[in-house]
Structures are given as C-alpha cells and as structure tokens.
Image (cartoon, rainbow, N blue to C red; front, side, top):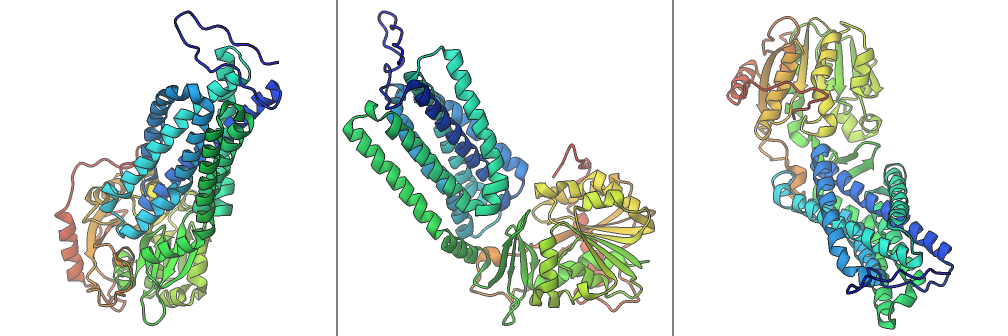
Length: 545
C-alpha cells in the first residue's frame, strides 16, 4: 500500500504531487526507479569520458581537455539541479524530456565534434575558436541535463514510496555512483575497443532514451495526460530514429571524414590500443604519409629532411651501437644504417602495429629501405621508459629519441628529467643523444624546455632547428589542407655526456641529400635567436610542456 503524504504546512503547497499510481507494487516501483538511476548514471559518465577521449585524440594535451570537460560539466550540473526545481510539479514528464534531449545531445556529440574537426581542416588555430568552443558547449549542455536528473528522480522516488529525505538521498546516490562505476569501466574496456568511439556513444544514447522513456511511460504513465504521453512517445521515437540512422551510417561518415582529413588516397587506417594509424600515398608517385592520431608523423617529401636532420649530426663520432627510442616506422634506422661501422641498432617502439606496418606495407617498407630485414636491427615493442629502467649501463654510443611532440600530454613523461636521466645512464663515455623537440616556430617554449630538461639531466647540449624547405611541388591538389600541412620546422637537441657537442657530419659517410655542415651551423644560430632563458626542467610530477 502506498503511504499517504504528510500534510503540507499551512499557507504552502506540497513539494511533490502526491503519491503516484504505478501499475506495480511500491517495492517493485522503487526498484525500477533506482534501476533507471543506475542506467542513466552509467550513460552520463560515458558521455563525459567520450568528450575527454575525443578531445584528447583530436586536440592533444589530455590533461587540459579533461580539466575543461570535467570542470565545465560539474559546474553545469549544479546549474541544472537548480533549474530542475521548477519542473518538480511535472517530474515524470520533465524527466522523460530531459533524458530524450540528453540521449540526442550526448549520443551525437562525438559525430558532431569529429565532423567539425574533419571539415575545418586545421589542427591548430581553428581549435581555439571552433571545435574547442563546441567541446565546451557540449560539456555545458550535457552537464545541465545530467544535473537536472537528480531532483527529478528524487521527486519520482518519493512519489513511489514516501520516505525520509536522508534515506531517499542515500538510495538515489548509491544507485548513481554504482551506475557511474559501470559506465566508467564499460567505456574503455567494452565500448571503445568493441564498438569504437562513434558507435559506442550512439549506442549509449539509445540505451539512455530507452531507459528514460520506459521508466516514465511505463511506471508513471498515469501521471501524464493523454496528450503528454503521445508527445513524449513521439519525441522518444524521433530520438531513437536519429540515433539509429546515425549508427547505420557511421561507417560512411567515418570514411567521408577520413577523406576530408587525410585526402582521397588513404590506404591503411587502423585503431591500435593507443592511437589511430593512417597511411596515405605510396602509389602512383604520391609520397607516403604516416599519421598518428591525425598528426602528420612522416610527411611526404619533407620526411627525408626531418630524418636526416635527426640522425646524421648525432652519428658524427663513434656509432657502433645505436638505440632508437620510437621510430617504429624504420626511417630513422634507415639513416643510421647509411653509416659504416654500425654493428647493432636497437629500436624500442611502444606501438606494435606501427612496426607491423613498417615491415609489411610495400610503400612504407620500401621507403625505410627494408631495414627490418637487416640482421643488425633488433626491435622491442614496449614502453621506452620502462625499457630504459632495465637497460644496461653504457651500452650505446648513440641514442636517437624519435618520439612525438612533447606538447602531446600522453608523451610528456618521455620528455622528462627522469627519462633523460635513464637515457644518460645507457650512453657510453662520449656518447651522444639527439632528441626531436617539436616545432620551434609555434612551440618555442616547449622546445627550450626540452633543452633545459636535457641539461638538468647532466648532459651538454647543442640545440638546432631545420626548416621544411620542400617547395610543395609533390603535393596532391586533391588532398585536404590538414593532410598536406607539414610542420614549418623541426627542432632538435643534440647532447653529449662529457662535453658540448659540435654540430657536424660524419666524414666517412657520403653526405646527406639535404644537410651540410654550414647549413647545420646556420640552423643552430637560427634556433639560438629564439632562446628562452631560465626555464625550469620538466619532471614526472611537474610537467612543463
């Protein structure tokens, strides 16, 4: 039997609309409401994690993106809770409407963000006022709707079974937190690997609208007028139709978006455990390009200039034993093996799929000179940081750090003082380290922070930059701007254990195609003109990039 509500104080109206008339017993009704809380909480957390993950993939700097999404969303949840007080008199209809809008907005958020990213065609500037603003808008709207759920659900659970406020809040938040746990675990371990970013969040939106609609139209339908029931039913069906149609077309959408980002000659596109790997070109005379999470890693005709500038200055001296950190594409190893006297090359690459492509893809393996068929080359697929902790002391004459940009937060530990301390330990006496330190032209502070961090590890440095002097004659006019836009320059830090290194080229090796000793000296002077002094080193507990 449903208990009667306590009378409201004189001169006031009740805070709730009286007992509901559910088609089931109160105990079962209460359980169904808490089950709805559980499902909606799981969906809400998936939306949050999806925004953080997608922003990290597309923009980079995962710490900043997570901070923006979560702080905006929590703020919006507070505003949404306050705003929902006005809907308490129509809690059932209000909750059903909120869930329908939340499912539509949250379920379509990934496609909308990826679409804006793909068709704006710029990885940098437009994100300041375009997709990044859209990210904030989605965080704000989703947070408002999630915040509105709690007071409405509190009202519904009280209408099923009147109880003290403390007990109702405890029940509600227990179901909410357990649902958040399930959603938080389902996203990385089920939705992302099995369904992918876009399909996973579309399915989450579908579950969300089904749970909200079933709860209200099934359990609280007697609280609704005939017209309200039909309006809510049609709205839920429309949201289901939109999400279902998007799920059916998501494959075509991904292909179109990928063409917009990378051009029409995408040959390979795979999602590994840690990143998206895309290969373009390599046929009909088009240069090979390798993209990792949308960022150009090996770029057409500028590739040779980058790898020659990375490797050859460090090989000016003893170089029998060489360690390459990263460089799973084999292109740095190609340049290393051009030097006589190299007896062993160890490559430590985190992503096994990059190595697999470098071995098996005809265009990429031809570009790297089939280095993985050379018996001197040995590859290990593991975390370079972890590998260095177990590496023997003084084992290498040269260490080449061919790692992604330090501004990508996931890789900042590979540009830390601790990492360079481990690297220094594996260098032989007089050994050299060279580090790819990102673009100088647009990330000057990050570049000089790398230099300061290497020096703090006890190494003497000679920083230099090399401009991309490709005239673009090989560019494919049919490709998008984002796909053809290579870095304007590359920054490097050459370091030595016992003395300041001298920038030069190995006289025993035939000269590189794109470098000269005089050019390197000029490049070092160009880099020095951008110097920022007094920067602190970046550490694991205090990253500075």
